[in-house]
Amino acid sequence: MTGGVGWDFPITDDLVFRPIVNFSYGRVASDSSVASSYIERETGDDFEFLKSGNLDVYGLGGALMLDYELHKDEYEIDTELRYTNITLKSFSNAPESVQGSTVAQSLSLWMRWRAPTGFTALKKPVRYVIEAARTGYIGDMRGALGFDYLNSVGIGLELDSSHYDIIVTRTRLILRYQFGDNIEGTSLGFAISF
Image (cartoon, rainbow, N blue to C red; front, side):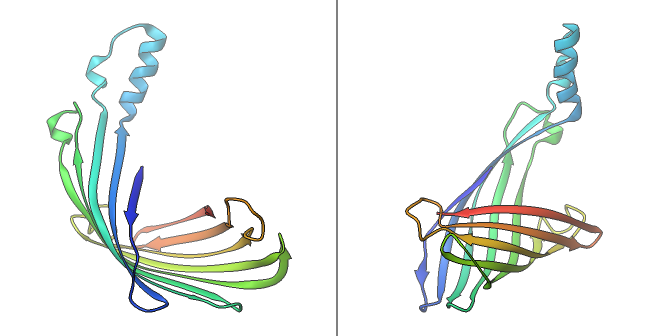
């Protein structure tokens, strides 16, 4: 789980500087820990030595972002340059050999283009969306996952529901392809704006 709180400081009409405070929490459970719970439930035996297969981690840090947004009837452009720095620390009863801390740092450039498809839904234009991003991992994170950078390209559709008096203003579905050194994959993203 990750969250953040930021504030926009306008530089020009289309460019803002956005500092963000980030926090995160995660739990990693080893296969043996998950298996021991099942075995204990089925057999009634106690496998205490496997129970320390959980590791809880919290993170505190922040990000600095430059966000350029240009909105026109014919198209919209959104470009973000972001530096992120979060210190992650473990805190659990796991063995000392798996406890530790690290500083997760990355530098990323993300771009999105939106334009009308010519179709209308919900009394607003249906837009096509094209995305591209590149993230470079620096510091402790460089090479820690087996790669130093990750690229992403995506395409999708966006519905605008702002004509109606409901809390959701936009709904977006995007298919993305991610690739880097020795890694590739696809994802389907669903997002709503308020």
